[in-house]
Length: 286
Image 1: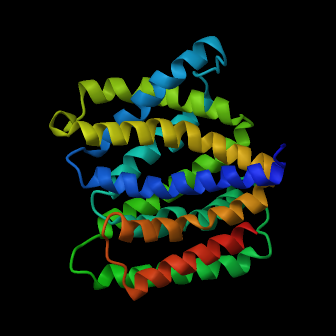
Image 2: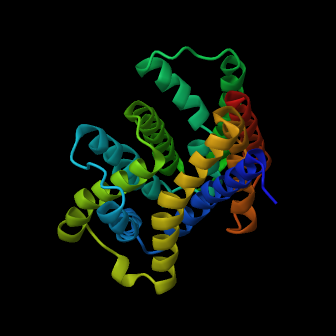
């Protein structure tokens, strides 16, 4: 029996939602382990390079040494990874659900307006204030806590800004998902791994085998390769509007996962922030 494009599209978008939600949880698990941000970044691109190098050699030899690929590697590759993995050392996963996934629908259209001269769509004037309400609720939660999560929260906001910039650069590049996945990961590995091996502090020798395998497989294969292909497959079958609206579920699912899987406490302000940012993201992607 042949599956309709719409049904298969929802399969791919569901997979993307689960992977992106899981990213917040797995990154926080890495943040609470002995691994540092340099270790997790090295695992991300080291594992991805091992998987993608044969594809680059024998199937899709994407040009690596050009300005376009360099800009993608430095933003969505190395820059985003270092900042976001550092953030989860200081702030819980639920904060990441709001400040990384929840802020993207806020940052991307503003950057598109600033750099691509794309006009703001009318419904964004409703979506953006709703997202802002969610951030205010999170701010109340942050400053009511006894522990200081502000350094991690600021890094999370920065990582969302970096990913928004990567989104704009990827759109301008005209590259397909395989070109971006292969080229971005390999060039990131070429740049970062020698610096990591020679100059940067390491804690990977103290980490458990389980921590290394979880971060390496999830970050290097599931996030870098599978999530990219699932997301592009969903857009092809459902279109960007329906796909984007579905992705608005990521903050809420990641926040619930933070409570159920990681045991993080969800108070009323944090729950309100998750709901508001999810609603705002849905309104922004309609």
